[in-house]
Image 1 (spheres, rainbow, N blue to C red):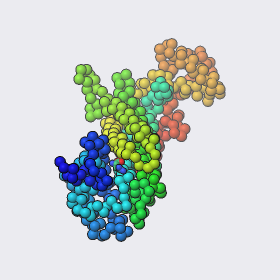
Image 2: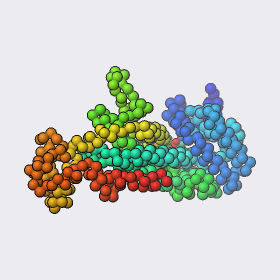
Image 3: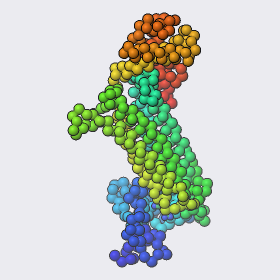
Image 4: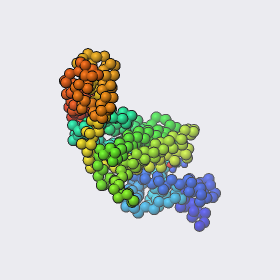
Length: 469
Ligand code: ARG
């Protein structure tokens, strides 16, 4: 291939006016981002359309050239959507692939599109648009997940399970209350999505390579056309800012931690030792050796994939931390972690939503576990405070002594006879027995935010209003 031909097909034909030779094959490979940044084709074309329309409106290019550019871009969009576009590594990235194709289609007028624009403001704009779309999609997916959790919580407003601290049985709670805890976490994740979207929604386009442009552009017009709230304020900042990607991956990392914690609960609950849940066939697998096994693979993978998402945040933080203003090519490394984060979240959120649609809960096992560990010892102590007027510390001690007695007799607190109890605290009456009833204990936790079924019923209704309205 002659040098001239090679120049024609490669990005150096676009930027190589001062170059004699083309890049080596290795240079092309390390330089190219097309394999991944082609995912931003729709955003690149939308931003170019807005830019071209603005150039026409500002009399920077002619209406005829503007129309040619616009038609050509539309054709390219159709070609890419139809899978007919040939992406070329030699053309480096999505921006140059599209510009080169535009030149093939409309000829010289294509060369006017890049007036008053650099790839630096172009890529910042495209990438912001991509992340913004992703945030909108994520919010919708999280809303569906919350809807699923709320629906399951409503079914289990009364279902009793053990609540844990230190993974030691602590107090009975309702399953509905437990599920609503995750609805709150996802609610905070969604509010971080909104924050991130609000803060990032400024248009970098028109910042040029780093310093702005001498052309009389209208950055407010391109901002409005692309759904931004307005233009970015400082051109140096605009082309070198990747906070939006970092914020996106930060909120993704926190969300992944939430999903991972819930996944961990499923793994534990699905074990034969707990037996709290039955996983649907559709979200578990068998063992190739042990015929009886039903493994919670989907939950385990959700738990594990949080590692990637957290790692991706770290990876971009490290890329960015040493970069002087303004753009550096290092920043091309921003896209793969973001894309992988988005793909991972799409899968993990969908897997958790799907799992919760079909999972079934073993109310009997959960009730037995809640009763087994004398989780009503606090109710006994509270009764001693309320009825006998004991100081809480003393009541705690008495109740603890009764737990010890019950353990010695291999029975539960409520199985102790009144006589047994009176041997520790003579003033106890049989009224205490009602207090030890697990449902009674649960109903009593009616402080705001507590687990009493009445509260949980109300909390489900509130969650519907707050998150699904
Ligand atoms: N592919 C590049 C990126 O993703 C586009 C910007 C290139 N700018 C430049 N001055 N070489 O960052």
